[in-house]
Structures are given as C-alpha cells and as structure tokens.
Length: 141
Image (cartoon, rainbow, N blue to C red; front, side):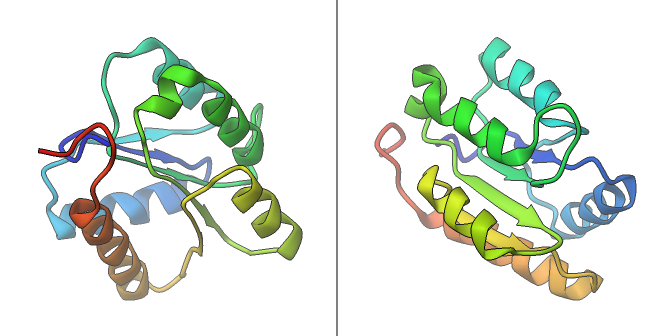
C-alpha cells in the first residue's frame, strides 16, 4: 500500500463523482484523486501503470465491467495483489448477496454511500485515516 499514491474512485454517476470530488477537496489530502467511469477503464489503468494507488473506492453497478467483476480481476492479477491496495465498495444499496460476494473476493470494506454531504465526508475521512494508520507487507518503514 502506497500511502502517498493516488486514490482511485470508480463511479459512473457524475453527480456522485462531483460530490466525492468536493469531499476530497474539503478534506485536503495530498493524494491525487483519479476518477474512472467504468471498471474496464480502471482495470486498464491499474494494469498498465507503474503508479501504486493508495485506495480504490468502487461502485458495484457500472457499465462494461461491474465492481464485482473488476474486484475479481484485480484479485486474480498477481502484480496488483502484491501492491496491497485496499479495495472498498461504495454502493447506493447493500444487498446481502452483494456483501457476501464482495467479502468472498477479499474486499476490505463495503459501505453504503450516504446522500448527505457531511455524512459522506465523515465516512471518507474515517476510511482514509484508518488506512493511513494501517501497515501493509510492502510498505513497513
């Protein structure tokens, strides 16, 4: 896990992208925020870049490659798996089947997107602060 790496947000809803962008602007983390509108774009980026992201926030219901399919491909890719990138689902709803499926794919968290700006800001801050304090196998200093 590269704590100074970019935060990847995979979200096809432009309104949600805008709100998340505002949240990260207010929280003022130094990490670059990179948005992808679908899982296929995100996977291509993750596979073809040397950049090691800090965290991945992924929606579930997206065009081309949904969040569950993307998580499975990331988890199956040995190079990506060794980067120890926290992979979190951020979804509008949490159907039990999706939550079970997510954790079976070694996801590190499943969160329901709050519609209230302050609630969203608080949950993002809690998540990022947790991962900033967490140690991983390849970044212990």
